[in-house]
Image (cartoon, rainbow, N blue to C red; front, side, top):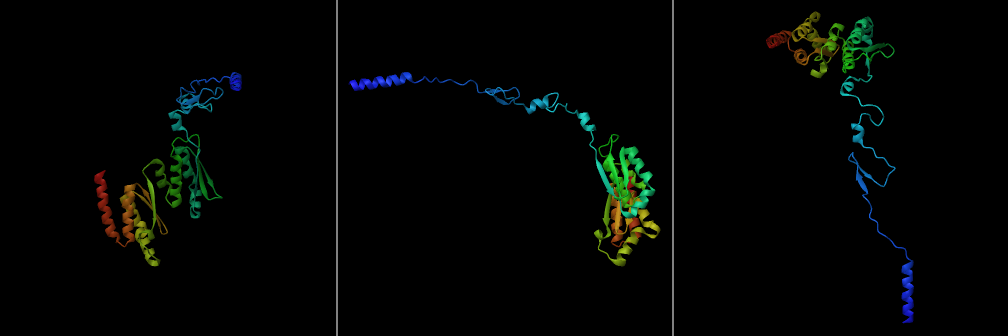
Length: 257
């Protein structure tokens, strides 16, 4: 009994010497910020930014005010375009250079130069460029001249938005070789270009015959009329039959308009 009481006294002494452990309930560990993001309250030195707050504020995180809708619509990036010119069109380009760059500078506000070493015409937008499609219009104008169109015909691409160029080859319609190919091209051109001029006047288009390549400038509907006439001539239709068809189509166009 004495041994047991001594043991109980020793255990009681150990319990008295052990420090008390108190359970502390944590405070609200997470609080909702005004921006809708959860921030840990214990991390007092950490600042968490919200994308919504920066977007809705007057200035962004970079310190610059966001562009308004009007400024975004008028802000243009500097664009550059280089249009290659075939060797046989370099001499006409130099001869007509004044008539080529003047409308692009005055009407579109582009910077234009001729690169003789590269055999190309280079276009670049400037501070005077207002139209977002000015660089594309200028490129189409130069490409039309490079394909063989006259300056007075190609300049319509700068003034009108519904004009396009359709290019194809004789072999795309029918595989011809030798004299058969030459006769097909002759049927399209006609004596002194009579057939080609008739197709142009009836369809209100412009046509360029460059070896076996055929380029047609006009609206989508008019290009289809001229292309159908050219395809008929390539396939062997006599010019008289093509004239009659063009006359019928021309009468329909007059009635429509």
